[in-house]
Image (cartoon, rainbow, N blue to C red; front, side):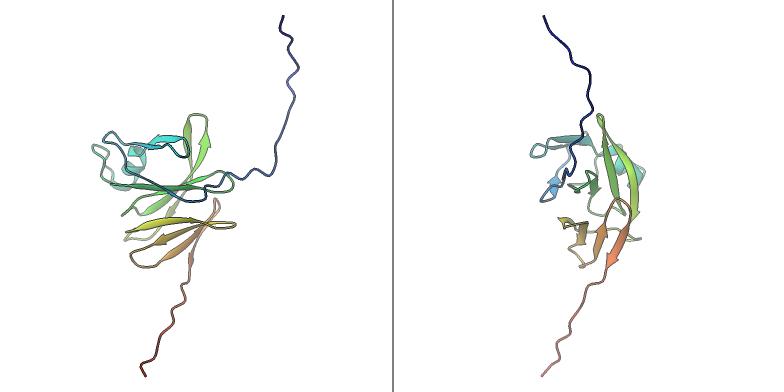
Length: 149
């Protein structure tokens, strides 16, 4: 005979959901993105439609994403004009924020996990952005000039 217990509330605090490194995945022909390392599967076509107004065929060779400390996923792809901040829900990823990256978009994106934010770097031109679930800020890159001697 099974004995049931009253449902008790339990909360585990201080959970860190962050991935140490970004995932770079090539979508399948139907738009499915499967990250076996972190156990995540979704379809890129709704994001692609938001970027290009076309979801008839997959137009990107790679999708880049990383999960931050608070559990949000940050997603983009080469030539995309936005970073999508997605909240995990039951059997779905829900759009939390959509950050614009400028008119020209991002050519060679790369995500880095930092202590209290996600860094997005465009490896083509060195632009850097700090991302949180609340805001995006452009990092100023200090350039040093060497004088000819």
